[in-house]
Image (cartoon, rainbow, N blue to C red; front, side, top):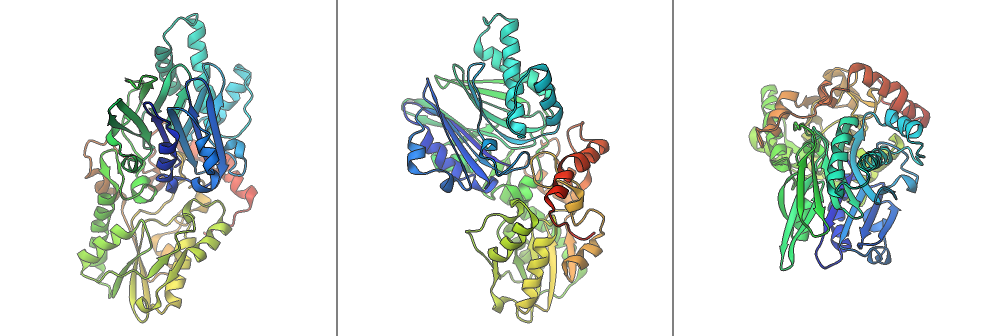
Length: 499
């Protein structure tokens, strides 16, 4: 779920815009941040832990000279969040000299890593799948150059190497690179699982170009959205700011539907679909379920922030007043993407506080975007009761999360998921609610697809086990669970919900 951004400017340094744009993508990753620029001769890089504003000081940013730059804010799903060596960007000095940033997760990273070590005798210094991706890309470039005696046009080599990469790598990946002697280069996996958009700005000197995970970064910097990078497409911005595009693999658009539920900001448009409008439509569908139960509800209340559009629409549709009763401390990070259950629990207590007057002797309908592990909602319901609520009903914008995510969202093992083998009635009891309403998978798909009927489908695997990429089979998930992320969970001794 990381945030990535890349800019190619004309006649001016790109790093300040890159830094400002990365701030707009902060919600996509809080573990670390990285910036790199290129001045036509040399690369300049900085990496640091934590939020973008904490990772760099003014001198760090101003030292990054050049008209091409890119940035990354990290949300760790592969590798170790506590090693700065695993923060992006990653670099190889040959061929050309390549810096690369990546959002997503490779599903065959372990096999590729072994192949790189044994076949190409390359040393990998981290457990990051981004380093694997970069080395596969570099090896492809080298093999094509060797086969063609280095006489082939460098731009043609890069596209051919990407075509080869897309036949080799599986999983989700949106990638931006800076390549010496070539330019700013970006590509997106053939299923378009993770987002990537192209923007431009017209200046007196010509057109400037930008790539980003969400279009909100464009708006801040005065760029206009051109379009989403297509699944399987690669785009090169040359050193003269000329755009060259090629379809490197047959593409089908299956974006991660969790982007619309929680991950993306509401003011973003992804794959021509408004995140905000999708969340309003999610509220419409939930309202029908709630009305059918004929509950005595005094107040509809969101769990801030991403569930606010759902709550507003539910309130309108069921004819019950909307109130804000939970106040968010905006200086605590997003608890969903915090590593470790104990840290999440502590952060939840620091993150939310109640306005007791809105709870006393009232039946509250709490609206949240999703329930993953169940810890957050259980504590919030307890807070509501202590504030004086008579009954607490819960409506959830997403269906029950029953399966791990393998494409870059931290839903690693079924054992961590409260809906793994509990019925909805049992979940309701486990979190302490008086009634529980979940979105259905068909309704969630309909809410998103209404924004763009041309979407081929959505990655809904965390809800129904239907993953868009063919390598993710039940056997793959079993191996992922017990040999990969599941093993790490047990080793870290993260407390798991009772099931």
